[in-house]
Length: 75
Picture 1 (cartoon, one colour):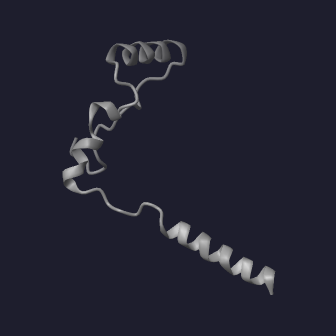
Picture 2: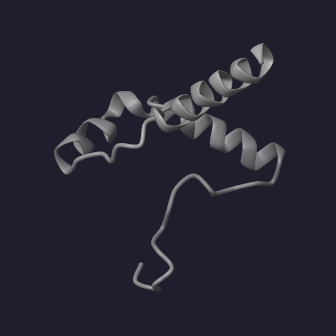
């Protein structure tokens, strides 16, 4: 009986941990903080431009760094 109660307790802990994960939606008033300049990975435009130049010359790859519009054809 000891291992069965341990297994049940383990299942309860796993279920509680899985349901306790962040499932809250971001309010409209909080979205301004997520779009802050600090939240960007590459915040130096000169370094980003240099990296893009190097990648286009070395790899022959260009673009793919942002979204031009949605799939509705209204860009």
